[in-house]
Amino acid sequence: MMPPDFWQHTFPRGRQTLRILDAQQCPVEIAYGEAGRGRPLFLLHGLGSWSYNWRYSVQPLAQQFRVICVDAKGYGFSQTLSPPEVVGHQVNELAQIIRALAEPPVYIAGESLGALTALALVQAYPELVERLVVINVPIFPDQLPSWGMRLLSYLPLPLVQLVDQQQLARGFAPLVRAIAHLLRQEVVFDPAQITDEEIYWLTYPYLYHSGPLTQFTVDLQLAAREIERSQRQQPNWITQIQQNLPRVTCPTLILWSDCDRWFPLESGNKLSDLLPNAEFQLIPNCGHVASSGNPKAVNTAILKFLDCLV
Image (cartoon, rainbow, N blue to C red; front, side, top):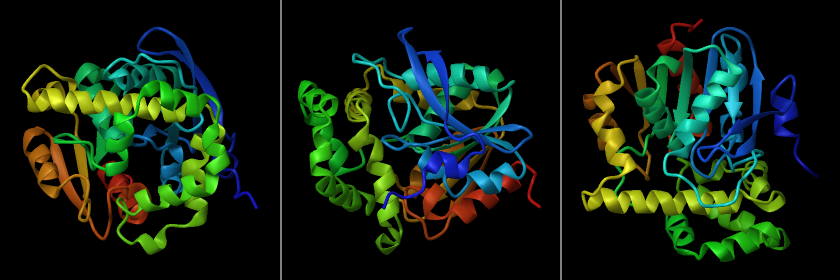
């Protein structure tokens, strides 16, 4: 039996769409959902995921805010465009989404790559963000964090596109879900808490939509190249964000999982030292994906930081 539809179950108007121009000025349809009223609070997912990761936060946060969950271009239910791709394209696209859906400045809570995108956004467009929450940010990476990501980044892109466009993975759905379950164990505190429903929805776009696998691979290849350039001390997007951290003057809450196996706690402490107006808080008993790993602690921290804890 198919689990309840995430969009219809979570948002009063279900899944909505917005058309923007991507970083190469090509039109693309972005999927989003919203709930609640008040100040706009955008929730940003990490690399390879989609809005489903925030499933435990939408309703609690919507009691105080107009919560807007966005699927980044190419992920979840948003449209994918054909390569090539531009490094840092997420920043340009997020700025357009914010301007289209809300009146800035807004609040943002971003996780993993969503948090890195938010930091870069504040540097480029400080007028768009009033307060920022970043969770387990890949701000000082030395490699792609998982073996699955590293493997995918080495695959020939034409092969990935063929599998994606023909939706060949659908014929191997049980195997895809088994691999996803194995990979998921890297980002959770207790693997026993991984459910079949969670795996179903996390893999759904890759099995039933054409495009997400290609976007994921392209973004991984771009990330791997930028990390390599960083290590060689060549110009790159990651180092640029690092060097511009003192420009992030808006109040920022840094949340870091105590059991994040992808990015060490030292990275969070270092980030806290470099941001001029930051608070740091540890999320207990939690792996890399904190939004679903310890949502109660994440939601409470966000509400308290935004002075809305009731």
